Image (tube, rainbow, N blue to C red):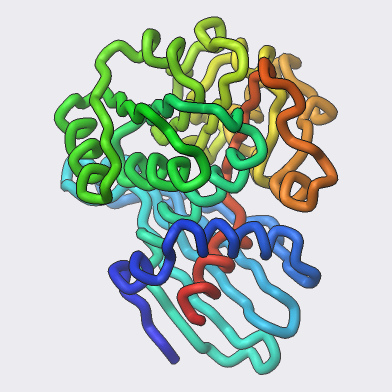
Length: 309
């Protein structure tokens, strides 16, 4: 049985290979991801945390399950809000073959999945990327998007300017030049691609500000209460999701569905359909596109399989 640390995973998942691995598994015969389970767990301090279990497998090859904890107050202790681990089993014998820390795996695969979508949804001539958020996902989102589009300008906005500056520094260490912006509305109005990686429960990206041809990537929200983009984004955009079942649980899709702003029939395609080409993705240069990522275990499995080799 092999064990991988977060550092091992980071080294084993370069962006081009990881993006390709996710594209492959989304259309691979025998690849299956059952419904995740979500549990509320008291944290011992009077607050509720979340515990998720996300299984997936490629029949006859590999079985994986990711266990995820979400402790919203961890920032006060300088710990990640989201932490995870993955167990891997042989798909023919059921034997345990691998285990890994999955904090880096989660951030990298999440960002890479958005890049898979952006390859098909962002304008080919997109030049300005805005990253909204300053947590662990923020530099990953910028790097992944930069792997599929050649941006002239990368901008980072966060509620905490110092944390946004730290994201800029992290990107500089990876060879990407970026700048901190303080006026979110102005930055939204000037962006070609907007990648949101926040834990917001109230919309922070306003659809009225979007210019034609913008691609909006929503990564942060994973439950019904979380929301990064307002109803105007949903109304103006062609809406895409990573998977239908998981995305409708997240607030950016669930809330518009409940209010009638959006219907299930309005969901243009999922990631598998985009990769397979059964939906063409962006069809007009002036089309506003929105991709909601809630996370699927197949993305985790693709990343873990790539690391396992």
